[in-house]
Length: 86
Image 1 (tube, rainbow, N blue to C red):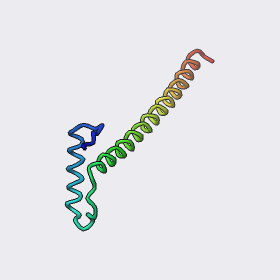
Image 2 (cartoon, one colour):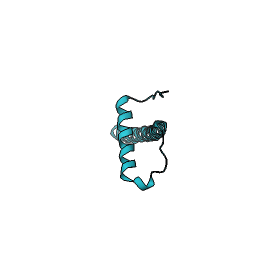
Image 3 (cartoon, rainbow, N blue to C red):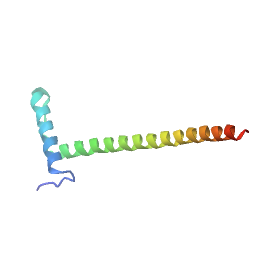
């Protein structure tokens, strides 16, 4: 029975290759022969972490843009008020 991954074939190949490379470089630590499902779980967790981080960065960017618009608006209002003579 083959498990179907929601990730692309290229992504699965890269994940498997990096996993096998890590296992081959540390033969003493290799105690269990994990099935490919461990690779999919590892990839899914990593993707979730990256997606969460990207969402946080997007939220911070939006807050900074809002803050800059407030500052620009207050400077423009001050300049217009001074030009009017108030």
